Length: 429
Ligand code: UD1
Image 1 (cartoon, rainbow, N blue to C red):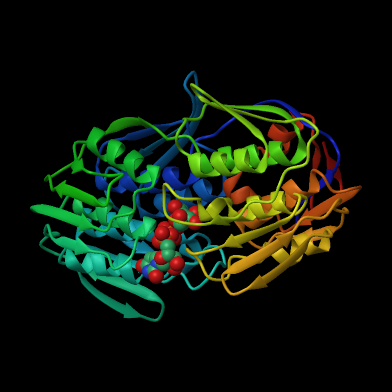
Image 2 (cartoon, rainbow, N blue to C red):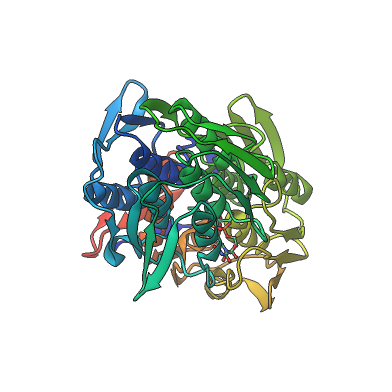
């Protein structure tokens, strides 16, 4: 298995182009199941997760063609007909978001058999809200032996969907299913993340009638059919935030381009509070830190526009060398501090109790062998490695490859000493 090796100590200087958002791309890909015409997605990231989903979609009847055109990386998805409504365990377990094919399959062909999902091991992560939404839309749901059987032979019907708490995936799933339902659906207590707005824009470009994404109430007026469209995937705010933290950690000056301002304000505010300089630009931001040590600041994760849980691990890495004690509260997922013991292997001083971690900044981290435990945790170890004395090697980086496109190349272009070591032990620069 591949590993990443980092030699700490180099400042970062240069420009990092932000890729299209993984979390948006995989839901947009699922939207291709809703029409017999081609859906062209531009600004597509090339990641293990998009490959996994492509594989699953092909099995269901979608032709998936990747190309690199003048508009950059694109994926053409075309499902002239659904050839199978069966999403097997082997393909769904690798990525939780694969479960989101259930709604579109039932919406288009009246039935589906989809495995219960896998995904990062960051807590229990049930799918009860997803099922509640699909059931509210009139599908009959049965669970047997790890599979969800959903049936709506006469099509889905518009409904009021009230989520007891905010779920990004369930809101997206409800939108994906309701666009072809007969009548009006209203989602109450919807997630407000920017990826929901992206999904609304794509669905509307395909002929759907969705309003209100980005607010707690989303209204969907069902239409009998959708058509093809071209849609550019929104920039990845988590990737942008990750490199912003990396720049603040290593010092230097990094411009993040191809992004969108306003997507990670909660993080940028915390970086400023800690003492980094942040300049917002038309297509991203510039992060600078020259010399001075950062100060500890507290964070608490929250749904958008709050501090993203997907940036918590990276921020914890940043705080390991800040001056003072930082309190980090995780409110979205239980068990999302698995990076803490790995950061401690690098010399960090962290104690975890329930949903709160206390990080007491140390003067210097020391390189060590560490192990990635989930997608965002893995990149926090790379960030810590940027300043650790000597060499840090991160194993199990298949987690990293799920969500970060060309990470070594992007950091390397700014002066970081990062290289991938192929599974056979050969270094690849
Ligand atoms: C999405 C993101 C993930 C991010 C998370 C929160 C994708 C592919 N993943 O995950 O990167 O960390 O939003 O911003 O977009 N829950 C239930 N029942 C459900 C659904 C969720 O109890 O049916 C719980 C979860 O266990 C979790 C909380 O709700 O504690 C929020 O999860 P949710 O917003 O659904 O996250 P995901 O969509 O899985």
